[in-house]
Length: 111
Image (cartoon, rainbow, N blue to C red; front, top):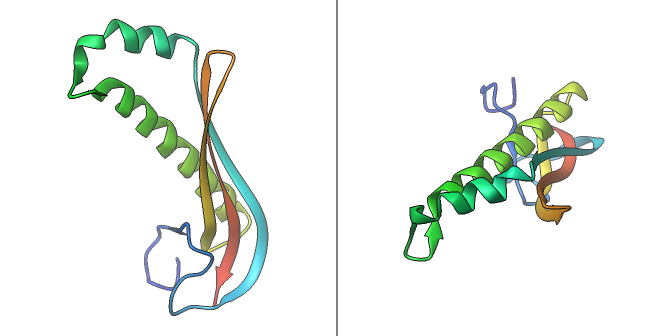
């Protein structure tokens, strides 16, 4: 349980959490998700989903990958005994027709 009485871990892009001090640094944690090569073919097959220059199917796939990467980041931080992850950065890269979403940050214990 974190200092706010919730079981959810605090995950933030900021270097600190307002009102709390970092009592201990546990280390860098990373979470990753990869969308396979078929995702692009499948998304282009549903090109009629595009409205106003945006593809709902593509955005949904990206959202799912981002959520997976963040969930993995939280799990790894929790395994270290952390109560929060600060300085989180999200990166998107295409590698051999696969999309990789990675989330990295510093696992900490808030005091």
